[in-house]
Structures are given as structure tokens and as C-alpha cells.
Length: 191
Image (cartoon, rainbow, N blue to C red; front, side, top):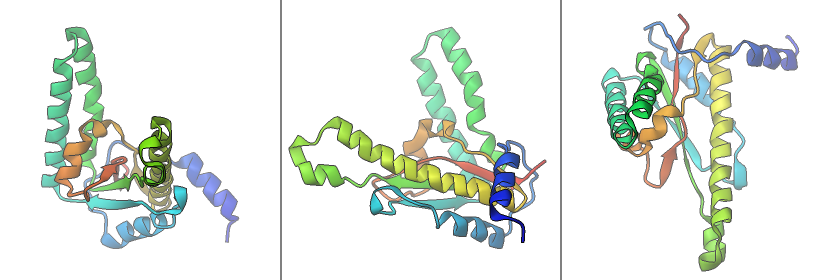
């Protein structure tokens, strides 16, 4: 067996963001392998306050795209014309996930320990610190998803641009109340 460090080093060096995918479906056993690796992710604060959901259905992906397009349009309306044009062009990068056969969406819950302990005397900086810890946990989960996909010969990309419509994405995907989507990770066979 090859040295595990060298295997990890190779994966980290060869893994690149993949934005174009073959239409071939990802078998469930491959999806399960990726999720199994993700389940081993470390988490901040001693509490695993994150989860993942998957999307394979084209109709659901299209609903996500429509929600993002609507949020982009509404946001652009509040900008000056030149800025709006640039933003709309840039936002096209938020939607290429629609072509991927599999989306893995990590989500998190901010555990309000400091609010519970300090009640009215909790500061905004402590609340931000707690939220940041949850985001850091999602980053760990996401990196393991990306590396697992690469190890299985798949391409993937870590996307946060679509989160301009995070509330709408959460509703479409039935993310449990009190949780926030941390990223959209499209996965597929590389073109």
C-alpha cells in the first residue's frame, strides 16, 4: 500500500475545481462512499451541528437555479446600471451546478451556547465567534467531500455564490429549521 501521506498529497495536488461534467449518473454506492468520508469530519465546539443532503433530480436543480436567478435580479435592481450588468454577468457562475448529476449540500446549525450562558450580556462578537465555528465545521466537511470525490475519479467544485439565495435554497431542499446551507458541491464525472 502506498504511503497514506503521499496519497493525500497527490489528491490535494490533483484536485481542481470542476465546472463541466458528463451527464452520467453517479451510482448510489459512490455517493454513499463520499458521504461516509464526510461523516468522519471534525467539528467545532464538541457538537456535530451539521448535516448534508443530496440532490439528483433535474427538476429540483432547476428550481434552485430559478430561485438564484430571481435573487440576483432583485439584487441587481438596487445597483447602478454598470454595476448591475457586471453583477449579472458574474452571477452566471452561480448556476453551473445544474449540469452536475449530483449535488451534495452541507448545512449547519449555530448552537447558541454563549447566548444560553450569558443571556442578555452576550456580545455580538461572541455570537459571531459561535457562527464562525459552525462555518469552520462545514469547511472541514466540504473539504472531505471534495477529496473523496477526487479519490473516486470524480470532479467537484465548492460553490458559495448560489448562497445569495440561501433562504430560498433551504426552503426548496427542506433543510431543517434553524439550519443554514453552507455550500453547494456539484459532483460528476469530469469532461
